[in-house]
Amino acid sequence: MTACTSQYTWFEVPRNDPPKRVAIQRTHDFREIYSLYDEATVREQASRCIQCGMPFCRVGCPLENRIPEWIRLAAEGEFLQAAAVSGLTSNMPEICSRLCPQERLCEGMCTLNTRTDPVPIGAIERFINEYAFAHGAVEAFPVMPNGLKVGVVGSGPAGLTCADELAKLGYAVTVFESLPVPGGLLVHGIPSFKIEKTVVERRVALLERRGIVFQTNVTVGRDLSLGELLATFDALFLGMGAQRGKRLGAPGEDLEGVYQALPFLVQKNVGCVTNLPPI
Ligand SMILES: Cc1cc2nc3c(=O)[nH]c(=O)nc-3n(C[C@H](O)[C@H](O)[C@H](O)COP(=O)(O)OP(=O)(O)OC[C@H]3O[C@@H](n4cnc5c(N)ncnc54)[C@H](O)[C@@H]3O)c2cc1C
Ligand code: SF4
Image 1 (cartoon, rainbow, N blue to C red):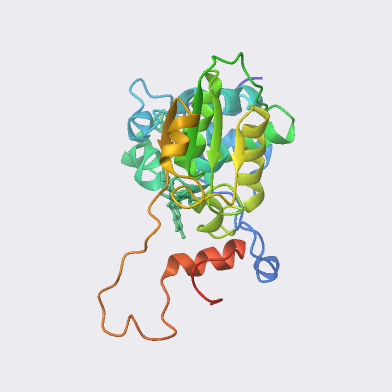
Image 2 (spheres, rainbow, N blue to C red):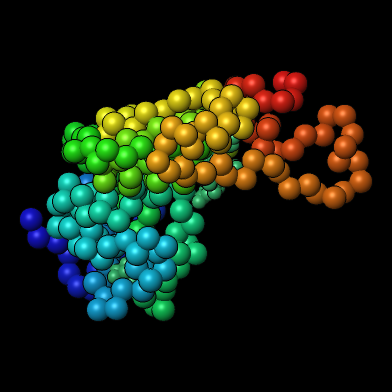
């Protein structure tokens, strides 16, 4: 397939963000706000990219994602190839595309900002990766074991990424997580209207198929000591995140009925027990 429009598409076609789900639906659930593009729109939006010789979008991306390459493939309608390229540098592109502050990163650096609105990089990334999942094109397999074992403490994005990279190299990885559900703040902090729990569950299931073992309801330091882990594993990765909320320092913050945001979010998101009574 060829790209659907001319090299001046950025001038002829305005940026078009994915449609919001209709308000009446959104008042009845807490699911993601934005729908996906349709195929024609994603190709048109991807065709706005001018394929810069010096792609500043990549400079703005902490992962240096190969953005112009997969945008060109998306413009050509080669969505599966585009998703494959996006997965070369990102361990969870379907998650980053929903959560990254693109306006400050890749899209904030897009050359088109000097004349018009940037390419909707995040929305295109989300489309191609959802397309790949929907077409069964995202899979993970165990590789030949290298004989070494690593324990990962914490199953947030840091722990998941570390586990994924090590498993690809043949390490036997076990992830220990305090809470009943893996995913860290992706699941128990960030509300579903931004990322639905099933998106993270799908990624965790993929990591399990790569051979990674998840042990939930295990708090390292209480149920298992670091010494025990060091005796069992060749190496440990500590990815426990920042579990304590920042205090406001305002008068009255210790009054009954005043709660920190994080335990509130955890209770509301996954309903699991925190060290607070139900809020
Ligand atoms: C409401 C909200 C919205 C956010 N929105 C965005 C966004 O849009 N974009 C963005 O980029 N970021 C966002 N963030 C921030 C993002 O979620 C965090 O930066 C990210 O999750 C940090 O990843 P992490 O792996 O370091 O830690 P976490 O995600 O916190 O994961 C750490 C995990 O370690 C576990 N753990 C801790 N101690 C132990 C122990 N002793 N034993 C076993 N397990 C343990 C915890 O239970 C937790 O599951 C948001 C955060 C919140 C709260
Ligand atoms: S900076 Fe913008 S226009 Fe240039 S390659 Fe990246 S996405 Fe395309």
